[in-house]
Length: 209
Image (tube, rainbow, N blue to C red):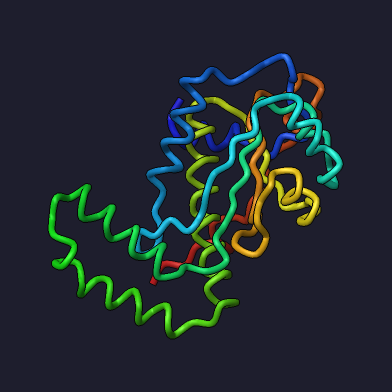
């Protein structure tokens, strides 16, 4: 199956088969694809929480407005975005670049200066919005990789922020739950899988200049 066929088969699953679980190998492939996601300036201002225990999924059910996916999925991915990027975070980032590429951190000062300048030009609210955009780039990679692995997904924003943060012990002063992604295999009686995919026709979507 090529990638267009995989994407054609993809839809936002409303009910998973709870008896079917992702293998550790396939789950890790999907997570690795997320790790390789594009991220502006390479900062990756997010974390990925992987909820796999049935106990934790059941705790999270009341935090979602449409809980059927949470109660039946194999795994739930929670993308948590940093609210601010401080000097400590940037310093650790450049130390990591230095170690990975085996170059002195001093050689990276021009790049660091450009990042510092960008940060100073934006308010905390603007930076949170920017950080969350990076989280959605990550989400796209995870969904694409899952489709290629023939794993079904459903991205979800419909949750109670305070409740999910409390259950997952997320410090809301530092981070924000941006979006979640349920992973698993569609249930045979999920009627949405038989519906034709509705997308704009090419002439309304694409414009060649």
